[in-house]
Image 1 (tube, rainbow, N blue to C red):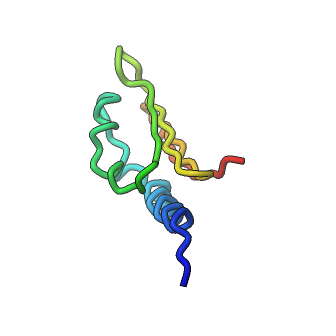
Image 2: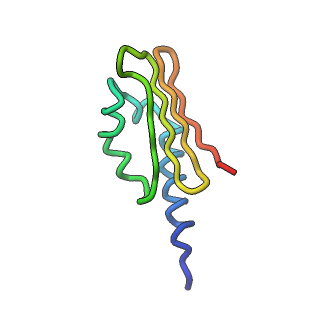
Length: 91
């Protein structure tokens, strides 16, 4: 039996991203960009996941983040009136 390590890790990423996409309010509560980087659930993504964020600091009222693993990407936007998380594939 051959296990495709990349595919298994990609499935792990997608599963967690789908949970965040389904209920973003449970995951996306930050007062600063540093709060995002301290979020415990980021550690649940597979090794090799890359992420970056912007906003909230210096008086900004919006927060944006992108979390990527391989060809999968979770895009996050939070503002005073919106909360958005969308899973998509890069090509």
